[in-house]
Amino acid sequence: MERNETLGGILIAVFAALLSVAELVNNDLEEEMMIAHSQFVNYSNWYQSKSIKQSLKESELDYLTALMETGIIPEDKITSIKTKITRTKGMVLKYEAEKTEILVGSSNVPREYWAQDLDGEMGKITGINQWEQLSQDYETATKKFDLGKLLFQICIVLGAICIIIRDNKKLQKNFILLMLVFGAIGIIISVYGFILAP
Image (cartoon, rainbow, N blue to C red; front, side, top):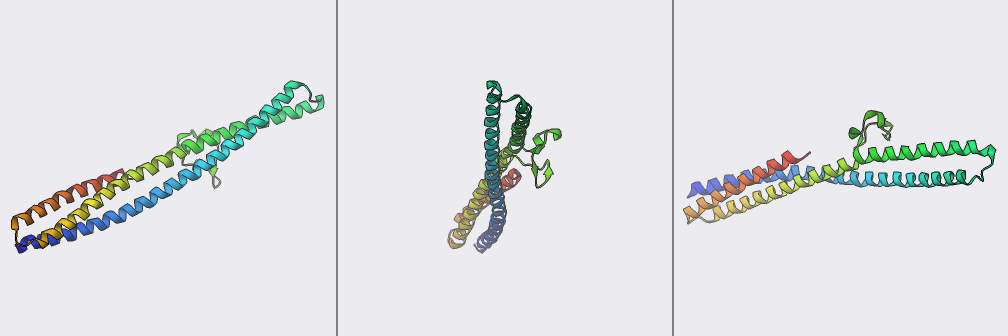
């Protein structure tokens, strides 16, 4: 009888330790997930601001082109307007290239097409799509750890019941067996969550 109670107590201690480790790792993953989500929002806003700037330049380009086509520009100003049109086209293309890099990330754009710097350095952009994927990967991993934590908590409850039931040795063994099954599943799911984490 006492052997089962001792085993139950030891298993409670083991699963409590595993629960603590899973909690610690899960907290780190949740923090990383929040950072990735925050960066996703920041980069999405950055992308939107580039889109607005590009739209303004496209409107300016349309206006200048329409002016040229009307023929109301004096001869001495045509060269100046053409220069302005060329510069504006260049800005539209520049914003398009920057948007692409912000969307997909520098690693997915050939080096010669890098258009957007980050703190003065080129090729350092992690794209919106990459932040979104990171956020989803962290979320998937944290869900696995949440499930693992739940299973460890169930193990601790089963161990407590095992210690309380002193009169029925067979029932104690069943609870110990259940603890081991739930614990093994919890360990497998937690390890899987750790593997899934970026």
